[in-house]
Image (cartoon, rainbow, N blue to C red; front, top):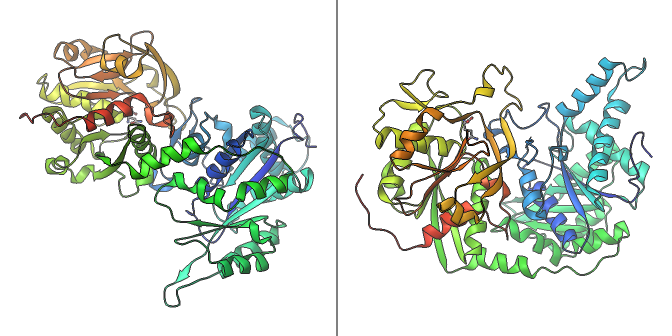
Length: 543
Ligand code: GLN
């Protein structure tokens, strides 16, 4: 038993590692396994380890690791936590994302306080103890039967070493029945021979063994399922039973992955290995969700104007939220990705709706404002989120209120009309990490508005991540001109939702509803957008 932890002997751990290269979909693998176990009535949670030195994902550009996902407690975390929340239909806390920065910061703080009583502080045992305690804290708090621990990066990376060592120790301390290692690898096909190759898998298993870890399950990624002979070969060379070699072929939707694993008996194998008895999984709701998602006859096209559209992972929660909403309305959604710097109005001619999402800094702002202007003037359904909310306020101020030079102080220090300005409590904060207005805050909704109709409630909670807000000086003139703030903070000071009643569907929120959308529980603003996209097209008017 480890120092300073409660009774966690009942908790079991699935440790998911990656070999050969990154980007193999370990997050979806972990989330899918979690989903299948949960469907059998097992309490399961998931935790992501990112071996980089950043303390959290908050200061990173989306091109680095995809979108920054935000949790209720304000944690700015890796996008894999979004997959966990979606597949497990749960709300996680920032304890579920460990980074090297977080761990080392704790160790160094303890060292400065004299906690180690004169010892030499070392990676083993001090950093590894800190890692194990952080994992067990999640186990204890969540009261889960099984904790899935996904280790980011690739086996063999220097920065993964302390985490792999901690995982090895967990196996040693808790025993073989309580800790299972799942190794995901690439099984490439060399086009000349057209044959699946197992050598990279063999090498990465060798790397794992050198650290003292023998994988129990091998998940082989590739375009196609693994050939039976290749499964046998992997089983033989990597010393795992044949049924523990699992194919993870490319799928049209990530939501098919659980069914691909189910068919191959992966959850039953894992439960047998962990000596857990469970009932049968009921997957009917999931299957009908998938049926709608992939095969509905009705289809909509939603444009998303962003500045990181080359990497669609930068906006994954938006795309998922639109798809969830569409599936629940018996339709399929296609996203048209538009790079803000290359925006022109013709690009919106073949879409049913527009989303302008999160953003920071000036680049792309003017292209996004143009797209909002087009949607407003042409009755195109529009959903603006955070930056999109702020830009829709600027667009309305410029073109309807006639406030030339209306802008955000984020882009221009002293605009003629600072309709978006820094929140007063943000003045003078020097650090950029974890200092925004972050996480879940209540929003009060005005009765009789579109927001009220969509949420069916007068008080809601949504997640936030921003520094700027609507400048209170401009609220009255905006509202008088028809830009209505239908959602506000409980003290009425902060504008949270804006809508234009005189438009088929134009709504924008300062908060981020995409983070709380789940496959079979779509979020109201996205449902509203999709409903509007499905409605007969209104006649186009000129701006
Ligand atoms: N950059 C804006 C702000 O800080 C919007 C942030 C966002 O879109 N999440 O307020």
